[in-house]
Image (cartoon, rainbow, N blue to C red):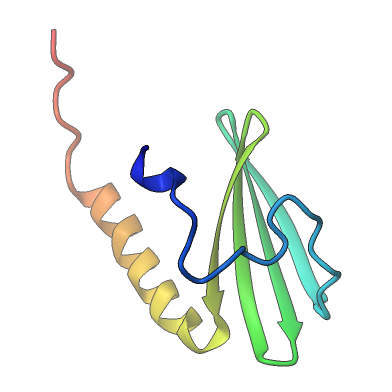
Length: 97
């Protein structure tokens, strides 16, 4: 038996194989950005626990999502600005022949 085939000691996971119940989230703003073959969707949302930014990357139907609580958006912005600056300042490596 493969280790990930063993039953969980915590019982069955909720919603496994079933649709999740609708969440109580309000969308405050949503924008979409196409870069090469990737689509990024930035959605500012709010639920009873607070506001957050959901960033979803869609590549050919495969989706990955990260969620950033609003309390971390300023730090995220600063780090992103640093990365953009570094990308502009550091010369690209020569392609390998």
